[in-house]
Image (cartoon, rainbow, N blue to C red):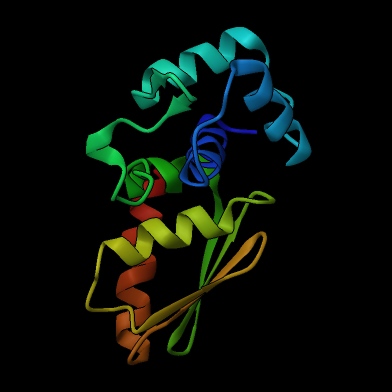
Length: 147
């Protein structure tokens, strides 16, 4: 599991409320299929700016009302996208298994005019564009991020 996806899972767990200890956080991640060592988890806690409260690890007050921060779209594309293929006014993006949703979320956050909407599965993203020309522009932009 990649660092961005692992940290996203940690943030999702903490949005449900504080987690009493690192061991409890490790168990919760394991239930999600993520085996994380103590040293890695400690780094993630530090990187995410989590705070230890009387009830356990929690999001810092400033982050409590916001969505988990995603890495930059270019980083996610470089790290997880395997291929980009336009098909008429559609763009099909293949990713590594389990990576389509965070990549799609990052692409959506860009609010590019070429994108009407995005659908993500497990390893495939479908982007609907207004026309074939827009799909080709978006394909080129995404392929440039891969280079």
